[in-house]
Image 1 (cartoon, each protein chain N blue to C red):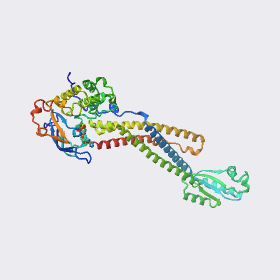
Image 2 (image 1 turned 120 degrees about the vertical axis):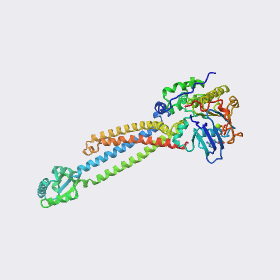
Image 3 (image 1 turned 180 degrees about the horizontal axis):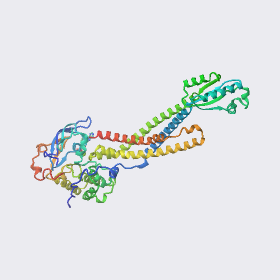
Image 4 (image 1 turned 90 degrees about the horizontal axis):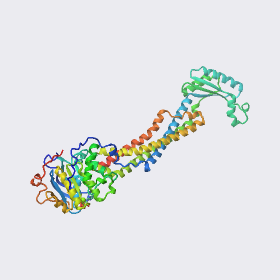
Length: 310
Length: 249
Ligand SMILES: Nc1ncnc2c1ncn2[C@@H]1O[C@H](COP(=O)(O)OP(=O)(O)OP(=O)(O)O)[C@@H](O)[C@H]1O
Ligand SMILES: [Mg+2]
């Protein structure tokens, strides 16, 4: 019988740290075979869509509000057509001289008639029923209550039958609807984030369960908690990363399609719903958050399991 | 090396219980001296594996004190225990091979964990696999190996890092007598390099083949040591045949 081999004499321990391919091989790669990355992809996609919706609504609301904040409507409510025309003329002149007024448009009669047609029928109804004149005024500042009172008193003498309204007050119900939708989508995001986090949590728990034996062996062979957590963490992060990238890609694709369809509507309002670069950053942060949660969960799971071993 | 005070491990009145069960190990007091070769025997259920678990730091004793490599294991912070484990070689009773790694990678694992360079791993691991007769199965996974082959991979993994203390639980339970002797030669060779060896076994043939060895007999969780030789061994029993402390690192 020949002699046993010279048993690993003078091995240079601690020459490298346990990592790279050899360490990665400890956790078998399953790629996207299990349901986990798919579930995550869906969750991340839904989160991205909800975030996209919320951001679009939010941008829409604030751009509409900004535009309308300085907009006021002046109505000249006078039955006599001649007096009415005279008062509108004077009111327009007075307002145009005011430093707060940036622009003013007298809404033409034909336009008013057209607006009224659905309610009043025939086009010349304006002759039978007195319709107020309308001035569309854009202020260069917020149409505050005080501003409205000041302008109203400005017109008191020359156009006593005028009435000034802030357009934003007319649109208040629209704002509150938008705000409600915004809260709704933020609520959805929170719920989806919770669901995604638990999906990630469950995924990393189950990955740990299936690799527990290996982790224990590495532990018993002198692996430090940090090494073991690192190996495991990396593998879970890979799984989640794939799901996250897939989910983000799907979510962005859906958003672009929807945005394209809205753009085709060519409604001035929708333009306000576009994304800035920082909106895209927020959306991109969703999968990153997913991966970070996965890494943290993985680490916590392993470390707490290892703590229970001696 | 470690046994600066001439000892690798000292147990002092150690007891172990699992949960609220009665103690499976009681009043264990003994010393393992560097370079000695111990056989641990006892009936099934006597507590051999439990004692080895204390030795390879998989289990904390319920009472008593354990000193290893000159330090009190009980009060050593958890973060420092991996250092201890890297100085141990363990053959587990149930092998505990990593299922999806090849025989080669299983044997290389302790070296990789200890941070040995990849270039320095190939030769010793191949030679070790050759010695245990598994050179041709180096790339096979444990599931495709026979029980005895798996056991040999487990042994190769335990000795590859030339540990200060080798702990083997029934390491020859699944091999034929000839292979058992061959594996014992491996332990002996390691022992001659200065490693303290503790082998739990039922195999009387094995005991007889190493007359120099010391025998620890467990009976219902208690160590039979009528002469006190395990606590205070006559130095002649090992010091003359093995150089104390050896030429370890
Ligand atoms: N994890 C555990 N939890 C509870 N009881 C245990 C545990 N491990 C072992 N025991 C009990 O401790 C006693 C000693 O078991 P141990 O495995 O140490 O015996 P052994 O001498 O190695 O036996 P064998 O020769 O069959 O391997 C047994 O009664 C066993 O049932
Ligand atoms: Mg046993």
